[in-house]
Length: 359
Image (cartoon, rainbow, N blue to C red; front, side, top):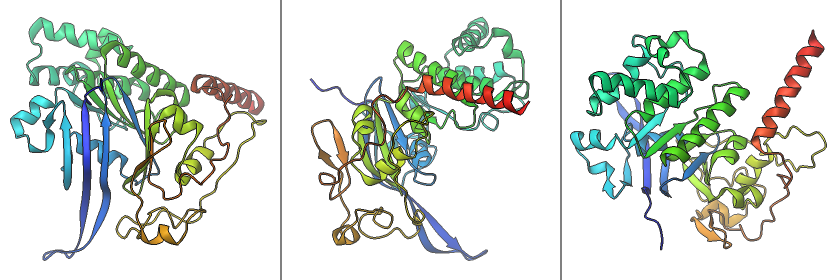
């Protein structure tokens, strides 16, 4: 029996008009930031969105929460059409859908104490008041690895890693089912990244959470995700279970991304796949396959016919490439590559050795 998805997105599109003029503005173009995304997130699943800067990952996450209104498409959460909800119904739904922002410094109000920040969603949704409110705040802080007395402090009194833990606690306050993690560790040191990632995994297992995890770091994605969606210029070019995608990437862009992942092992044999040129402008995307201007396997068909996402193989991979079956994926990630935790340990040893050498 198939599991009903918690979140179902179909044909999601976001176009930003480009206007010219100061008083009498006129539209001169359209930025196609997100252009027809379709994906599901199952209960208890972590779906990672990866790709270069500007591919539409964060815009997608914000549209799912209706922090940005979509141009077209459908978003269904637990059977409800998110885009048709009125203001009151949307506020109720946001109890179940929260976000962890990328910047732990800009995402917290500097005028509010941590206790006031965490108490705000509890009061807003009528979840706690009085002594119960204080108890719940202490519980949230403890859950993310902080102390109850931290509730009396202001954000500027914390480190970046501690601030991100506060952001996680705020997202947990309303007891959500889905959390959009918008690059939650990209602004943190490597050792702190590991702590926050492990915290997110522990909370997922304990609370039964689902994540949309937006990231650049494919090592982090490999550590935390269940499935991975690779985006390029507003579209998903490959969607697959984590194990299948890292073992046998089908799309040339996915192969190039994985080949760029650093491995802290000088003896590791890897194949680098450099990409020529820059990402085309979303204001004027190329016809046909949007990746054909940088693809070494591009043929005449790629320049005129846009490939549709289709199943390739029997491992749950879907790929938007005309020649996915004929492109032989190189060995770009060794099977014995150390997992993320061991890679972090190796990086820390290199850092210590460098400091000892410089002193």
